[in-house]
Image (cartoon, rainbow, N blue to C red; front, side):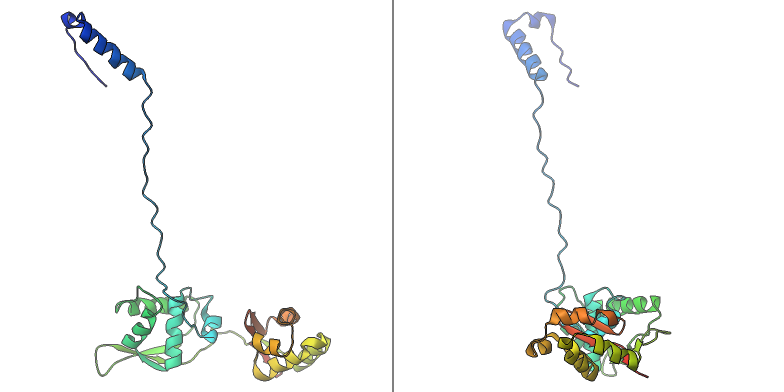
Length: 224
């Protein structure tokens, strides 16, 4: 609210009267629009510097339970090393994740334990005190299936029937899969086998194989 007090004698003066008219005209004008600049949204910066090399077996077994690549890569480090000090694990993690600090190791291992406890899966490593210092040593125990889980199985007769009914172009790849446990895309290409066609061919036995863009892996057992 604007309050202006003018004496009656002053309003009769031409310059005051003119100023009042100008003021009234200004007040009648629409206020100018004020542009309010909002701060740009802060984008979350990814802590991943480079794509870590996660062990395929660990990724297959844990990717539906452990959501962070940082944790999956930590398990890969322990598996490949067999025994690894926390400082060494931290150094390797820092090559791929910028936010890893000394205190991060407790957060990573704690998160892994919580995720595995939720699905009643055993932790695949143990923690020991380092006799040469205050750090910890992670010792690999081995991968185990969840408690009560049954390994996928296909009888020998069902396998033979499946192979015989499959297009002849893929039967060699199936035999290779049975013998070695996997059939890589590169191997199929070298043999002149259409890899996309092979993926479609093994779709009926998806309960015992895992397929991805790089190959087919046999997960279960065939026969007794």
